[in-house]
Length: 256
Ligand code: NDP
Image (cartoon, rainbow, N blue to C red; front, side, top):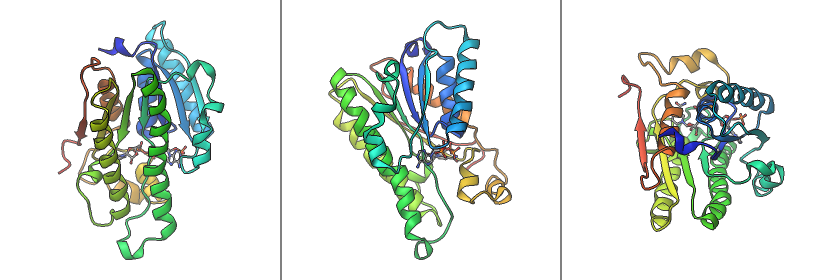
């Protein structure tokens, strides 16, 4: 029931494109306030404008408060000082969507540059962990909250050429599962969304901007859209307080 989201506040990392952007807009439409985080400020501002429009169109009185904050998840000190940048009306966060993440290249283990390993782990794992710890402090103090992490099928099944990305997503899975078990005696909920192929900027980033290579990944497959995943995230967040959607694996119908 989407009315459970009315007037709540969601913080979304990686809100400047793809799944994060679609999720921001869908929450806005449901009357939820949204705090949008990513590195690209102009893209964030565009998503913020789309949130405002979606909220206006919904005709809801609740929600309608949005802010964009530039944050590089690889920068631990920026995460530690995040609250100093957040407007006071959006500091009481109810839902954290740890969505930001990326993959670069498809090199095999022996050929991967160390800097690529560091950057993927910094964002996909260490950034996600730091954001979680930051919010968990508040969630524990107020005895409520929902942490929704973006894992992947790559965190369930490893594939050739995906060693580092898979390792980051297996790490997200271990971290998320452990946290959910540790929090069973609290009202705090923990969810992991594990998409298959979703057509976003993700593939473009993987192939360093080569649009043809990015597109070739979807040959024979009708990929999911960011909106498909956003619907799952918003659905999980709007379950009754006693229901915890632990894991959701979502595939395009023709992905094996
Ligand atoms: P996009 O490339 O469209 O979005 C990734 C987002 O992450 C962007 O908003 C980007 O913003 C942000 N981001 C990347 N690095 C950083 C950083 N260092 N600091 C802050 N923000 C960062 O891809 P998707 O929407 O597809 O990906 C979202 C999540 O879904 C990721 O975790 C991905 O691993 C996961 N996923 C995606 C799948 C797919 O097929 N697309 C499949 C399974 C899982 P900016 O560049 O502005 O910082």
